[in-house]
Length: 264
Image (tube, rainbow, N blue to C red; front, side, top):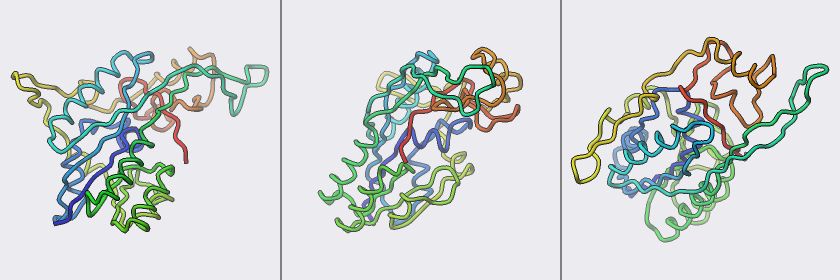
């Protein structure tokens, strides 16, 4: 058996594979086991994320906390927290309307620390010889160098999991092998609706907002009109108010979700 450690970039996974779907109630153990070979013994899953704020959506921290509680019921999962910052910034419009404003004020959201923490633990665990195989769930190109070091200098096998169905990029090029997440694999790796939690008969339940993907007829226009802008959605560092795609039938989570800045 091959001792296997898994490193999950929580925000990268969310925004590339889960946002706008009904698959957010994700059992990482089940998912990763389906991606790997039978001789990969998953000894540890490190999940890297940051506590979200409730400035734009008061329910967001509650939903995240429920999911972290669900993950904590898996004995081989450890949760590593960074920081999540939301602050107003002024950004230029790509196609300003003639005579209208050239800039717009947005809430700029940045997730700090997760990529550094993931890279640090990945290299640290490798040189301590804690695993035979590492698996990274991320497409963040900031991780290219630590993945290369693990493969080429510490001489460990390391797999990269592509999250969004796109052609493998720079990070995957440095992996020993590549795996792909698909909607069917996500669907097959969901937690039960209700999970026993803690030692006092408590339980944690999947957030109702995560149970389905909703249509947004009329929502896009009303959101844009409140910003005083017509035409194309404002994207900047905000994913069109949580939209996946730009049509009137676009798929969106029931709460608008800000997009943290990603490098690479």
